[in-house]
Length: 169
Image 1: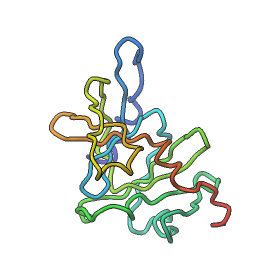
Image 2: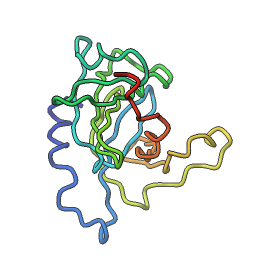
Image 3: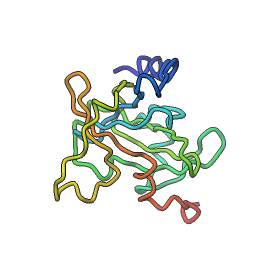
């Protein structure tokens, strides 16, 4: 998906939905390695393409870093560092700026594939498996068109990272 298509979907997502009647939620779908994941779109503030020369990518020295975002120091977690290698040549990293209960935070993913609409009925519980026991931030699995998505509770996921970035300054 081209950046312009993502931005077009970004500006139209979430509008005109009556969640209580339709039970439809918009999700931002993204890639981490070869895994397709999605998060609640209402948490997304901005999407920024990060090419190889980007100040954002150049400033990342570890999993957690601070970057300049519209004049503020934004804590950023590079989610790509903890994933199995995917097809890096085909991916353009994206900084997803999130408005969480604790404040603004960014996460870098391998790519954004678009916005999808899912009903609660489309989201299946996470299978009870010892392999998945440490991933309590997985809300479920969803089938959207022809792809399986891991539905992630981004608030819970980010709570695993010490979001006190004062030590990085």
